Image 1 (cartoon, rainbow, N blue to C red):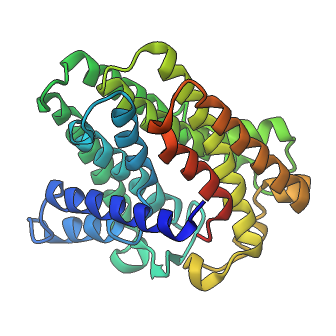
Image 2: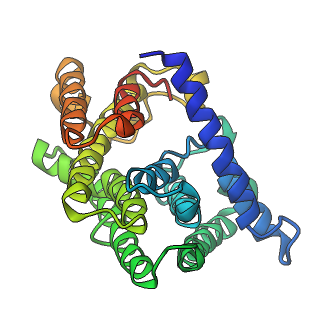
Image 3: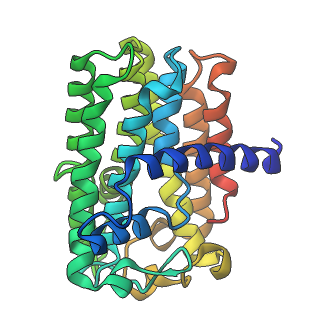
Length: 299
């Protein structure tokens, strides 16, 4: 695989999504300015935009123009950004830097950071609901998408995984529990993202289940590589200190399995990603390349 070429493609897709995020967000000087400035700060901080890319790719694989799913794609990114703002708070992971920049609460204060997360989450669902106005999208499809994304972001999804993560600090948990934790905290939003685009594109249920399998395995591989980067990544590239998982007594795949076995599990997850796409042809090559890229990413 041409890694440099794929990185350029990812950058182009990211720039397109950033253009729409800028259009959808209220301007920074909207009253009260502090909250809108903080929202922009939290969103435009170097994120990879993988979740919105998955939304758009789901629509493309359903045979539709990706533009029909752009509001939902950007809404998914707002949910992800809100979760990072809250994750960084002193009561959670207590991080001072995110992607090389001071975290939101360090710049705007803890209270405003909490409200920034709240504002991003509510703005996300306002944006996703607006997807009903897209040509060819039926209201019932948007309602289904809202339900799935809400479940993935809530107590049975991302929030549930975060609670499990906090509860597991300073404890040793088994592999099954760790996989459940991360399937909720990390994997649920990846799955909801890819499914959302496919649902908006009116994909049949058989193909939708194949994409669901891909997304679940992708989420696992992504989390394992995150854990590995925290051990052996480049601090300047990551934009945050390495070794924070160990300092915070977090349960990780390398910590539980060792580096070699964790790397093996990541590779096996990617193989399962690729296998999930058997019913798709060359139109799914972006997802295949994305899965392989996950093993090689540096941040």
